[in-house]
Image (tube, rainbow, N blue to C red; front, side, top):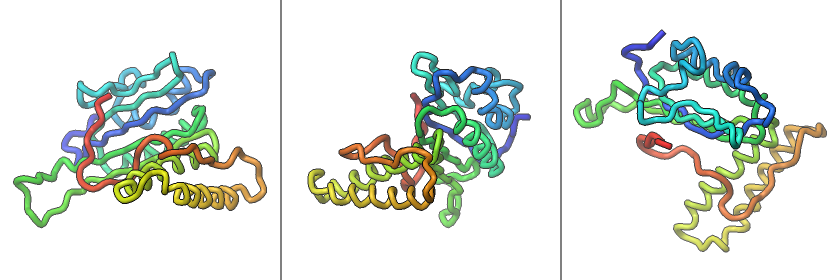
Length: 211
């Protein structure tokens, strides 16, 4: 059922590459924690965002990509829905992907509120993928981009090869500890430069994506 006077507006954003054999029914089932939380009876009914300017939840058949730019009113219990969604998308994903989730505190007024009161805004970066190696690859790429972007304020990009190599070593060590002699995929690998798409925990309120 719709959640009126909910303490948060929750924005979910990300693009998830899906396997070519995935069907709409499978996508609907994997995303059922989201549309059911919104009080909808189906994915088609629940795919529309609270904000008309946001595209909501869409499946692009041309490149087999699930695109999410969707806002719903809710509470802390939405985190359980996110966990269930990630488990469902792991089964359908073709490659690793990151999903950003922002909790906007609807009760917080930065201009008129108590100056000592703090916003309950929160930001999560979730990861899905067909196996742990694919998930670690996305995590690695995001960390490399964050670190390189930060350090390029003080160093030339060509000087940061050692930093990237150390990040790769840390992820390789984590991967080796995880598999413990089990072959579950390829190690996260360096892709050069600053890695993949951006992410991380930034200060202040994060802007809502509109694409």
